[in-house]
Image 1 (cartoon, rainbow, N blue to C red):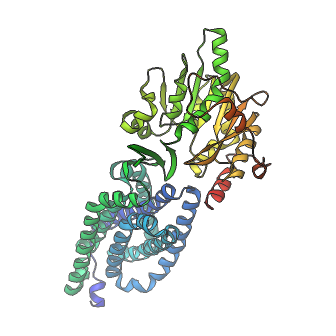
Image 2: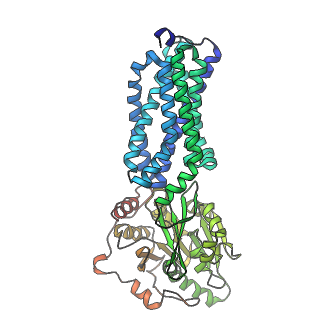
Image 3: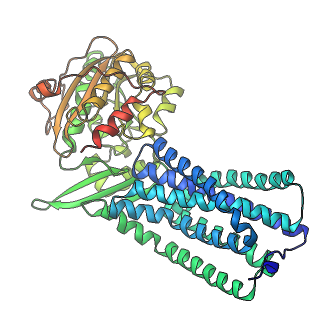
Length: 528
C-alpha cells in the first residue's frame, strides 16, 4: 500500500456526514461494551460498585494509552482504523461469552475482566485520533471545530448506547447475544467507513486482505450468535452440582432452579438467585417455619381476642411464595407480598415444582401480590401491618445492601401497627457473625427492640433471625395453626441461646451512605 493511496480521500458533504454517523455508532458500541462488563460482573460476582470501578478505571486508563499508541498509525489511518474496528468488534462482541466461560470453567473471572477491559479500552482509545485524521482528509478545518464535531457525535452515540443497553439489548437479546449483536453492528460500521467511503485509499492487495479479515470476523460473530444459547446452557450447568430444570436471566437477577433425585424416589429442588442458594426443598420448612411463626404468634392472639379484625401481614421479598404459604395457614389473615422481579412471581405461580412447594400460595385469592421495589413501595404507602416479614436475599450485593440499612428499617417500623411484630432473616451467626450482629445493631438504630434467635437449616448451616418490636424486646413463643414439621416451643426456646463462641458482637449499624453490611458480608462469606 502506497503513502499516496493512503492520503486519497472522498470529497463530499455526504462523506463527512457518513463519517460522523460511524463515530456515533462506534461510540454507542463502545459504551455498550463497558456496560455489558459491569452488568455481567454484578450478576456473577455481586458488588456492582466494585465491578463498575474496575471496568471504568481500567478502560479509561487504557483509552489514554490507546490514544498515544495511535500516533504512529496516523500515516496509515484507513488501514489502522479498519484493523482496530475489526479487532474491537470481535473482542467486544465475544467479551461477555469469554468472561462467562472464564467464570464457569476456570475461576479466573477478575483476572480475565481486567485483561478484557484493558484491551477494549486500548482499542476504543485509538479510534478518535484516527477518525480525526480521516475527518480532516474529507475537509480541512480548524482543529477545535473538527474536535467539536467529532466529540459531539461521540457523546451523542454514547447516550444512545447507554439507553439501548438496558431498554433494548438486555430485554430483547440478553447479555450474551446482546454483546454479539453490538459486535456485528460495530464491524459493519467500520467496514462501511473503510470499504465504501475510503475505498480509493486502499490498494488492491490491502482491500483483499482487509475484506478477508472482515468476512472472518463477521462469520465468527454470526456463529457465536447462533451458538450463544447452547453455550449459556452448558456454561450455566457447570456452575451447579445438580441438573438445571429451569433458568431465566431477568433485568434484576439470574434465576436458576435445580433438581436431583434423593433417597427412595424423593427429589431435592433448589432455587438460586445470582448463584446464591435461596432454599432446598429438603429442609426449607425449617427456615420458613422459624421465619414466620414466631412473628405471627402475638398477631394471631390479638386477632382472636377481638374476633373481628383479621391480622394484616406484609411480606417483603419471598417471591418464591414459601413464606406466604406459612402465613396463609392462619385463618382470616390479609397478606400482602411485595416482590421486585415479575419473572420470579411468574415462576412461583406457574412452575410445577414451586407450586408443589408453596401450595399455590401466590395464586391464593386472599393474598395481594405487588411487583415493586420494597424500599420505594414503603415510601409511597401509609398502611400499617400487624406482622411484617422481611425475607430478602443476603446483603452481599450493592442492590440488596440498602434493604439492610437504618433507613429501610425505619420505613419498616413506620408501617408496623402498634404492638406489631417485625421479623428479619439475617444470615448466619456462625459463618457471618459480623453481618448478623450488624443487622441487629441496624434494627436498634431504627428504634426497634430486638430478640435474636437461630436454628439449624442443613442446606444453609446455622441460620439466624431477629424478631423486633417498637417497645420491649419481644418474647419468642408459638401459637401454631396446626402441626409443625420442625418448630416447637422447646426448639424455639433453644433458638434464643447462642453458644460461647458465637456471643453477640457490638457492631456499628449499616446505612445507605455507609453500607457496612456489604463489606462484612462479602468479607465473611468469601472465606467459605
